[in-house]
Length: 320
Ligand code: NAD
Ligand code: UDP
Image 1 (cartoon, rainbow, N blue to C red):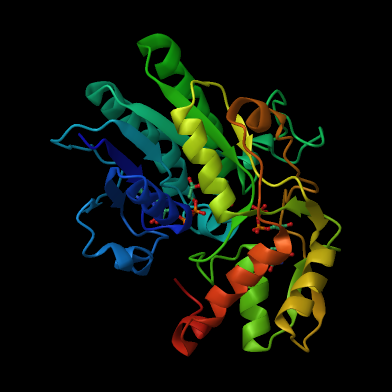
Image 2: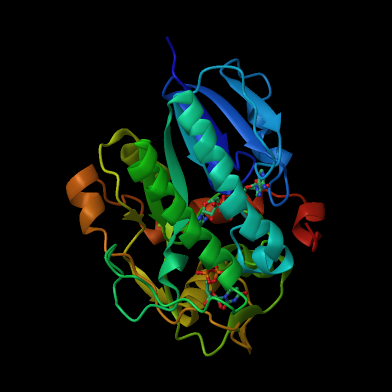
């Protein structure tokens, strides 16, 4: 019998790629989303896929599913700083009430659940690179706190279901991941720079651009998540690409890649924007036998090809 996996946030960037991966592996996939930051277009190619069903539902409301479910991947949540600043209460609710609903569903179905946590739980880290043992440095009442604390609560309630109810749980701490199907106007740095290059606008670097990030291509991320779900490991695991770069140097890379004749301009650094971020992936390597395979040049080229294929209307749409 084919196993069934429920994927929340299925119409989003990562969720839609996970749907593809699980269908390719022979699973029956139920996608769930309320489209608050997602897009139907990301699932269009699955319209006639017999192994795929979609439920339009807000996971913060009670979830009823009749059929058996073997695995749950909880990926529903706004994920970009401008999204969670625009909808802070929904962000807190999907990480808390939404996660509670999905843990309850997993318990009722005796399913294994993997929840999407984030490098943001480390806040503006004082330990570098970040290991899973680091507790983090988060400003609870800062603008990013709604996302960071929702995800921290999500980890806590997940571990409580694990220890108190004996539920099979997995926690992935995802570091900045990119690729096709990111929303052009979600404000994250890669769609922002690529959109600016394609529209002939200057590239907006926030602060002096000395802050760093480490970018992981989506297929690598999906492989890590897939392995973690099927592993026996119940504590959090970082999945990301350790190749770190400053945002200023990254803007220069994008200028070269896109061939734009525009320049870099500097804008204010958002409040509590982490100054450095790089995953320590020793656990992923030793426990999952995983490490990233796609280097930034290759991943960025594929991502730029995707953004180049968007229509003019999509390119100039400023609001989601
Ligand atoms: P995304 O915005 O593209 O996808 C999120 C999806 O969740 C959207 O389709 C949205 O409509 C849906 N959603 C939000 N609230 C919902 C609700 N209440 N009910 C049902 N659906 C809801 O973002 P993404 O980059 O694909 O991120 C997916 C997950 O991965 C998130 O949980 C995010 O926190 C986590 N994550 C992503 C990254 C990254 O770099 N992409 C990094 C760390 C963590
Ligand atoms: N950033 C930038 N210009 C932009 C968008 C983002 O310089 O137009 C910076 C942002 O301040 C942060 C980094 O790029 O330091 C990554 O931002 P993103 O929103 O992609 O991810 P996060 O901050 O959540 O890691």
